[in-house]
Structures are given as structure tokens and as C-alpha cells.
Image (cartoon, rainbow, N blue to C red):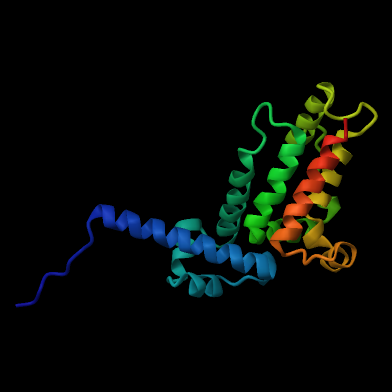
Length: 198
């Protein structure tokens, strides 16, 4: 008599699905950071995650959906940073520490911005982060003669400076930009700079 095939209980199936989705996101984050969207391969992502590559289409609708889900991780990471009353120096420090703890997300952001054609980007004068800096400017945190859009742009560049200019970072500071010491010093210095914008 043949044994009846056992099927996992619904709760076990949910846990397996969550594990598979999480493993795919972790693997995709590493793959996209190393190779960019164009260079990343779904077979390589699935192999890293230890799952069948068909699950990428099943859970995310394909490579683009998986990439978008990784991007959502970054947005979720930074969404809670700018809480009401957070001083700009503290906010700057949070960004440096966040990317220190998630270097793959930092590299993906860098790849996106370096690969972006400015002709394909629409100007939005009311983009959320710039609007926030305008609010801070009205409250006196940023000097009236500074353009909030450029302040944001330059703060972003300073936050990413160790990854943008690794050789220069080492030449100028004597520290390996991948080291915890560099990141801590960079966070401290960026915090001081942000505090002197007013």
C-alpha cells in the first residue's frame, strides 16, 4: 500500500514562502549591488538564495519586480529617519550609519544614480526631501541664502563620499573608507557640517 503524500500545514507553507521571499531579496540585494540591474541574472540570484528561479516570477513577477522590492527595502530603511523634531545634524548622522550597516543598498543607489540619464529625469520642485529642507530653512536650521535643493544634493554626496571616492578618502584621511572608524568619523563630521548650515 502506498503511503499518502504529506502536505505541509498552511502555517508551514506561509513560513516557507516568507523564508523563500526573504532569501531571494537578500540574494538579489547582493547581486544587484555587485552587477547592477542589467548585469544581474535571475539564475544567479536564485542559486544564491538556494531556491528555484521560477519563484522569482511567482513572488515578484520577474526581475524588475524583484529589483523594485529591493528598492522598497531602501525606502523603508530611510522612511523613519526624519521624525518630527529630528535636528538636521542627527538626520545626517543617521544616513551615514544606515548605509554603513547596509552597504549593498548604498551601492545599488550609487549604481542607479550613475547610470541615470539626466534627460530621463523629470524636475520636481516639490520633491519631498527638498520640501523638508525648505521647512527647516523657514525654521532657521538652514541659512536663508542657501538653496535647499543644492544643500540636499551636497549632503547626499558627503554621505556617500567614502564609496564615491574610496581612493581619495584613504589619501586624505588615512582611513580605509570601508572601516568602522572611517564611517564613525564621517558621521561625526557630517553632523558638524550640517549643524553649521544655519
